[in-house]
Image (cartoon, rainbow over all chains, first blue to last red; front, side, top):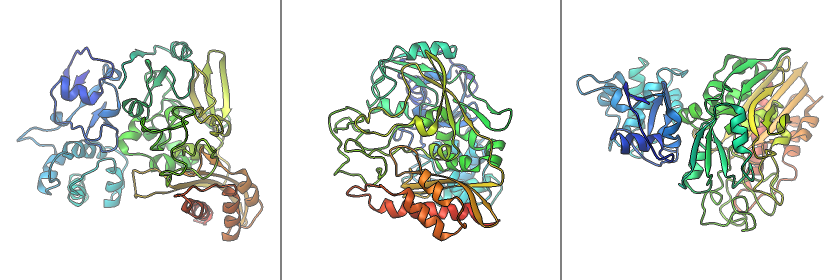
Amino acid sequence: MRINGHEHRLRLDPRTTLLDCLRETLALTGTKKGCDHGQCGACTVHVNGRRVNSCLTLAAMHEGDEITTIEGIGQPGALHPVQSAFVAHDAYQCGYCTCGQIMSAVALLEEPCGPNDADVREGMSGNLCRCGAYPNIVAAIQQARGKS
Amino acid sequence: MQSFEFRRAQDASTAIAAGAKSGTAQQGASVRFVAGGTTLLDLMKLNVERPGQVVDISRLPLDKVEPLAGGGLKIGATVRNSALAHHPIVQRDYAVLSQALLAGASGQLRNMATTGGNLLQRTRCMYFRDTRMPCNKREPGTGCSAIGGANRTLAILGTSEHCIATNPSDMNVAMAALEATIHVRGINGERSIPIADFHLLPGNTPERETVLEPGDLITHVTLPPPVPASRSFYLKLRDRASYEFALASAAVVVTVANGNITRARVALGGVGTKPWRSTAAEALLAGEPAGEAAFRRAADAALSGAKPQSQNGFKLELARRCLVHALKQATETA
């Protein structure tokens, strides 16, 4: 698999989800485990450019795939525009869901999505935030899309 | 999660041969195909599904959406829900299917879930998902915990004294209204199954949900040519505005000429143990003036025979109003 541009050759228990592979095998702990059942979105990563729940897919199914995690999106001093917008809008409280929110939002920029806040809320409905930072998350994404 | 052997199918024949070694293609199968994984991995983590072998079919060449000669559409089994929903032909000719797909799950899950997998989506009944609870679907003969239990979200149509689990799919409801055909390859060759015959009522065997046999591989789904001048609509009602299963939904495809309905196809979701097409409602609509009176009569017919449980009686009127509203939306002149 290629993860954030680097090739990895791995031998894994077949049960290993992509999420557990990233966190436990490769120590890429930016991707978070929330519900582990595809209900919260904290584990969102990109597979070949598409956002997916990494908890509901087996690592073994991704031989040769291009995986992008939050560690591959931006770096301190060189943030992705969505990351900068999240900072500017204070779009988090505890931060646990944030990496998944940002990975989802970055992918949403490339998907068919209407211009309104309601469209963003619908497009982001697979990412839950127990702190309730939703208004600021929507504002951040709208700024990153140039729709604010 | 129980340990399993993981194999990637090199071609359809390999997958079919591997699947045929299972004693059943239904609950308890020892061999499972995986493509999106959104249902299977979820249930394997819960130990509801415990296959000894998982065969990855996600790289089989079944991921195309192609127009059929003479009209109609061929949809490969591994076409992702998001790709299907945004396909220009689907949006133009089968709007109800696009709407239903986009009403289901989340952006992430739609990027994973496939057409074939969605046809086989399992119920969200909490007792089915909890191995500590009796459930006739998961373990035949143990009883149904939902009857007399927490059944607010469960079915009122097509139930039996053994199971009241709801079919949770949105896509299936639109496919039922569009009269889709499911194409299967198995150890004895290929066969085509109208969607109305694909899912089974629970009856005495709720563990059997479809007509699939060991080794059967869904290869594609076909849709008939769009009906000229027809309009379609999917309406989904649920507890949250998004990312929630239907309490009631309706898929309708209607044709109106000079104010009269000439043809209607109607299916309900969220209320049935299978995608609930109502030919009785369709027959009542045909030839009637498009309007509230006919819609209401059709809705009454669609819900006739409904058997509410202790907590889901509200679904009766909710589903009726859902269908009436969907028919209004589809027949309003632009």
